[in-house]
Image 1 (cartoon, one colour):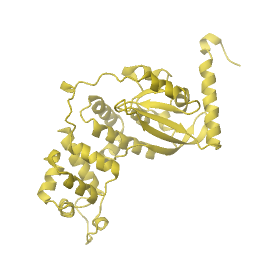
Image 2 (spheres, rainbow, N blue to C red):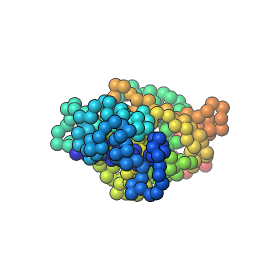
Image 3 (spheres, rainbow, N blue to C red):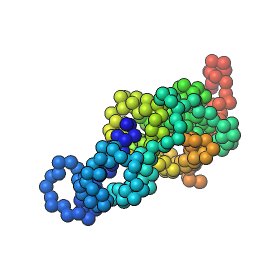
Image 4 (cartoon, rainbow, N blue to C red):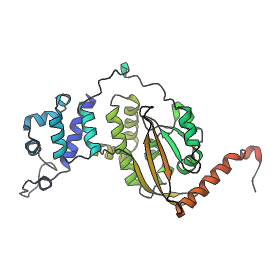
Length: 301
């Protein structure tokens, strides 16, 4: 029932953000009991009956909705490409065999060639995200950029791997990295919505959402708003405690042979102050990695 409930939640959230004037309907003023279009208005614009649309919002019969109906709803609701794909995913559960009893999938494995690839990227920070946004591996520059306060080998421990969503909301040192944390958090939740749309029965994702809802009011509010954003590229400002202010672009690349895994690569505009700062950070991280621990080497001068 989680999937069918999500269909109704998503439709209601998108209906609420449209006013009559947005879709060419007369607005006679006055306050409405609920924000956005009424169900009957949306149904009429989509060419379906109000009763049928009401059942869809209740999660009834969504899996049997035709392409024409879903396309009409996407058109009237002005869904983005990512939102349209999300609607189809919610309405049409994957009927491939799943692990029974709500058992989690086995721990993800990272191909050695992928690990070698991100290690060979030189100054470019890079990491690998798993199917639930766990960080499966990072190179030295990515560790120094995003999580220098965590052990470098943290992704090697399957049970306690860093999770990109959890870090963004619950680790104040990670949140402080972003010059615009509100946008970062909203986009993070949008990406998590895409992940849950693809794997609605994953107990790992269910547990993650429950944990974040319990511990972050900000996450709970964003999750209820049902943002959907398929992350592909971002340009963000960073406030790094060592490198100082940075402007970096990250590219998100899907690994076609590893279901749900993505590589994220960060880079700065060539010749920019950010590129110079990133190079200094990378050099410092490489130097720190080459030095023995303080307990063995004694104090440094």
